[in-house]
Image (cartoon, rainbow, N blue to C red; front, side, top):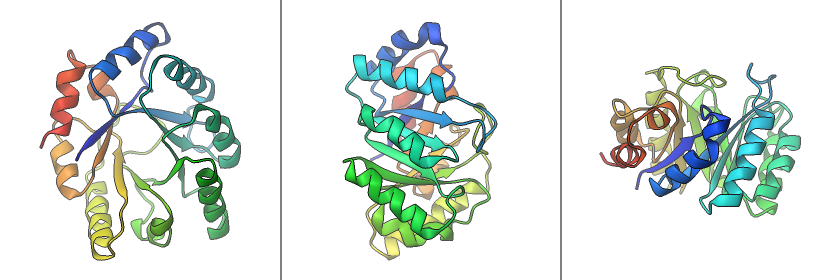
Length: 220
């Protein structure tokens, strides 16, 4: 089953609460929280995403899908544990060694939160294989992280396909999430490649009818 995680990165503060309510009634599966530190990526959304996560928890029971695009992973994990997200996904690239990756996985799980690992477009999918048995989700960035409204990089679709083939051959139960430039025109190719969670921001937020757009996203 295909699920939709709506990125709220482009939501204006004055519209936020009403828009969160409208997204829930439109049946998004998750709120995607894009946490950026101004170091790992240029943009800094630390305060805004804390504010939005807090607002969502007060009005909605929908799960939070937290994506940490940060260098200091431990500090940011700690700042999101109180929100009881469904999943916290951190990037492989800032991790100095395998031990660090495994420690983050263990720590997130100890707090009864699912774990995801994300990779940038230029990171090899094979670099993740050894961690797949221990995590719940792989997030493949289909644009360079840090900016909204980019066009999907076509080469990233082959990474989705390669990962799907690997997990099928090795009988691993794991979600494949894709994030960046996803819209109604390219979603089918990503789903056919093996993605089962689509992160979409601009294509939903800027649409006239959230419910209709989300339904179309989910249907092949």
